[in-house]
Length: 134
Image (cartoon, rainbow, N blue to C red):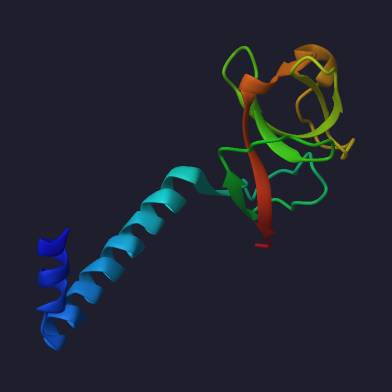
């Protein structure tokens, strides 16, 4: 421990600046890696319609892929048994780790809740946390 303390006390001011610069670059790189792993930016198709009224066709969406505690009303992406991915709303929880989904635009074809039934939490791919217009 005394060797480290002696080394730190012996640093010249320019060495402190260099060390601070490298630490800043390291922290910034770690933050970028974290953001890249946790979040995803997605653009809805511009043609057609959106089955969720909050987001217009062509909107850019910031998706939290880790999600965490899901809540009723969350706009999420789910994967069905065939592997297709759908944007939908969580509307009910069965208390056992499954969610009922729905859409709020009747004129737009979206995932049919009756067809996919209760969706397990493992099939929820991420929550929309920010939507930007076209």
